Every structure is written in C-alpha cells, then in structure tokens.
Length: 637
Image 1: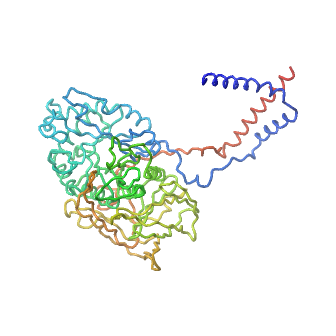
Image 2 (image 1 turned 180 degrees about the horizontal axis):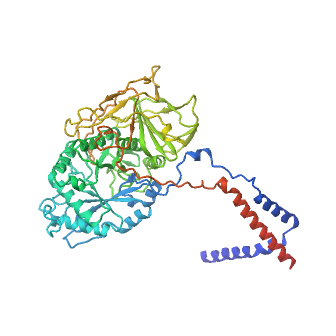
Image 3 (image 1 turned 90 degrees about the vertical axis):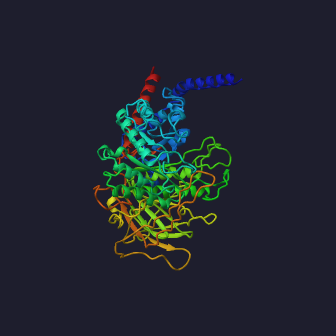
C-alpha cells in the first residue's frame, strides 16, 4: 500500500512537471510579457535596497573560522552533536593504561579509545587532551591503578622502563590521529587513604613520571604538550609548591623547559576561590624563578545540582538547584579568565552509566540526554565571550562583580550580585545602545542609556541550607563596535608585599581605584558608597581557609568559606605580561600566549547584503528576460 501510494505521488509530480511548460506557453499574454520587461528594468536600476539586518543582529557574534580553543567540555565524544552546538574548542579523553595494555607490554587495545571519537573531534576542530593514568597490575610492584610504574628511573630506552615504552607507543600511535596534549595522571595531590586517591608515589616519583613523559613524548611527537595532572588544591594546598621545588632542584630542568608545558587544576562549587588558586599558581612559579611561567588550565570546573527534579540526589553539603548550576558557569569563566587561566573546561558534558541517585555533573542528563539550564548558560557564555582579547577589566565591590571582555565585535560585560538582595547598577555606556542577555534563556533585550548610563538590576544570590556558594544570576551587557581604547582602564594589580610568605599561600593583589559603576542597594534608602576620587592602594585578597575541596562523592568535604572583599568599587585590569621578571600582575595574569582568532564576517541568514542586492536583481531580471524571448520564439513557430 505504501509503495503504491508513493508511485501515485511520483506520477502526479511527473504529470505536474510536464504540464508546467505547456500550460505556461498557452497562458502567456502581452500584458504578462510587459510585466516581465518591467522586472528586467527594475533589475537594471540602481535604486533597489536590500532588507537590512535587525538591530539586535549587530550585537551577535559573527561566524568564526575556528572555534575558540579556550572553552572546553570534558568527554564531549559522548554527545558530539551537543558539543558542536555548544561550540566547545577542546575536550578531554581518558586513556587508561590498564585498558590499553591489560595483560602485558605487547597488548595494544585500540577499542578503549575509539578512533571515531578522535575523527569526530578533528572534524569539529576540537582539541583533544589525553589523560594518561591507571597502572596495570603487571607493570607495578604497588597497588593496581595508583602504583608507581616499574623501572621508572631506568634510562628511557631501557626495555625495563615500562612507562617510557608505553608512552612512546602512545605518542607514535595517537599523535598522527591528532592528539598532542597529554595530562600526566589525575589529582596527584590527594594523599593515600583519602577518597579519590590516584597516585601512590612520592612527589619525587610524580616528577619522574612527568619528566619521563615529557622526554619520550617530545622525541616521538615534537608537537606534544605535557600537562601536570589536575590538582584539587584544597586536598593539599602546599602540594604545588613542593612539586615545583622538586622541579627547580633538578639541574637538568631549566634548560629543558622544566619538563612540562602547563599546570592544571580542578575547581568546584565556589567560583570566587578561582582567582586565588590561579593567582597562587603564577605566584609560586614566579617565586621559584620558573621563566617563562607556564600556562594554567582549569580543565575541570562545575557546580553539580542536587535539586534537579528529574534527577534528585541526597547530599550532605553543596545543595544547589538547576539555575545555580547555570549561574556558576559565567561567573567561573569570567573570574578564571581574568585571573589568567588559559583554558577552562566544564566537567562534564554528560554522565554515562549512572545509577539513580548518583551525583550527576553533566550539562546533559544521563538518562534521556535532555539539556539542563546549564547547557544553555554555557552555550551563551561561549557565544558572547568567544574570541575575547586581553586586557580584561574587573570592577568589584562588596555587592557585585563586573567584568569587561573586549572582542572583535565589541564589548561584553558580565555582571552579577554578591549579596542576597538585588543590586541596581548604573553602568557607563560605551555605545549608543546595547543588548542585555539572559545567559540561561538567551533572551536579548535592546537597551539604550539614560544620561550616559544603563540602569541594570542584578537579582540577589540564592542560598540553600545556609550555604551561599556563588553569586546571583549573571547578566550580559553586549555593545557592538566598541574600540578597546574606549574602555576606561586602570593600572594592573601589583604583586602583594611579602611574596615569599607561607608555602602554598595565595599571592594575589587588587588595586582600589576610581569606581565607574554605581551600586545602589534596593533594601533601603541607604546606597552603597561610590568611589569617585579614591587613591590607588594595594589590598591583600583574603586567603581561603585551608580545607579540602569537595570530591565527587555523595558526601563531599567542605570547601573554603570565602567572605567577599569589603571594598569600595575596585577596578583592575588583566594584561599580558611584558617581562618574566616583573613583580606585578601575578593575580591577574593572562595566558603566556594568546592565540589570535580569525573572524569571518558572514551574511545574516535570509537577508541579502546591501552591497549585493543590485546584482541579485540584475541576474534575476536578465534570466526572466531571456526566458521571455525563448517563449516568444517558440510561439512564432
């Protein structure tokens, strides 16, 4: 029946096509031909105007020739279509040694990491970070997965150095498949007998693991980049300093790039701890004389929701709803990039093989792949920050944060309240108009300044069970065509005095200068003071208490309880370093190398560009004219 219906439909379509030409010829008339000639004349004229794009379209980012590699989502290969929709520029994939070589050095299981995943990443210009970990039992005298590989201190070409042989084969096989960034193990700062512990060796053993990886990888794949395993910071706040001290004590290190290319961190739940952790990473490098300083990646960050009605989770701490997970993303990325993180990745895109009640971190739910609000918040964060350039301007008070990101299209300002009550801001206008964007819904509202200022209300933060973990709902203010020099800037923050203080201490600084944003409290007649002629002074950012960061467990441990800095509106600017010996810009240090992004302007969908309109009408008119001549000649026959 279905085949018969299809044949009837195709037959009808064929009959219709055959009728077109004959009916068309029969119904031609003199008046109709005159109409066509008029169309030709219109096409030849120069007075045709194309429909201009809508005003809001001017604020939207144009299509980019390449993804911004600074925005990532961990394990994007599980949901490649959604990863492409987000526009993430990197992902991380686990390479388990015990899976690739389960029974001996001659094993080579390429089904553990599917080559289709790597091909898909290349097709969408996503950079892949491979994470190397998990010692097989046959390769260690210690415990499974976390044991130190046997023969680690033997020469690199010694068959007994099992780790060197494995790493060499990994580089030779996966380098041609596009994997050049390698993370050496995971969370090495978690001590034995603590949940989440992954490496049983000493700090010296871990350095040897990194050193062997660096040398072997670089020999087999000159493009390889070696990342230190993601540190939690809160499990052992002094670990980074101890590790880097071991590095600089090696007489071979300085002349060999210190045997690594980047530091990585895993930071969760409290976005305001990010600048201290990243700033400390730069500060410790500076104090130990590592030059040039290494880039700092945050390749895991998130605030998992416990109150998702469709995936409820029982937790002892860190009670968060779906909207708070979404709010976390713009806050973490603004604070992280300002602090100098070169790349930031969400952990993670989707959770796989979850049991009901397990903690689900994904932007996508594990059971039906439905998208949480955080998915859209991340999509819009990428959309409106992608391609940003340094410097990044920060304005901070005890009531709000505001960050200004300069992009080829203009300026995006990210702002949110730090109090439980709403905050009304008078934000200086940089253009004749702008667009306010809700990161979750993506709703864009055109706004015009009044008296040179936009009036913006920031809703207050939300607290559950006495926990106020992050700020209120962020707002994007987007202005097109704003030159970087038109944004008021201030001197960069200077290094805090006493930089050689407590090991593991946070080395951060903030400059208090003339405020440019007025914050007005909505809880009473009194308003927050506005700094108009404040003298620049250095103020130490309070250091978070030394408590371990939460592990991804049903009973996470406590994170630091930061108190917002009670300062009048403070401003600072993150700028690229000009000298590795400078004692400034530690807390607000951007990536050592900022990759330029080639932006390609494209036409708005469904709209003919103005400068092409006349050619379109000319072509259509000439085509119709030739058709008319052909019809007339046929009729005369």
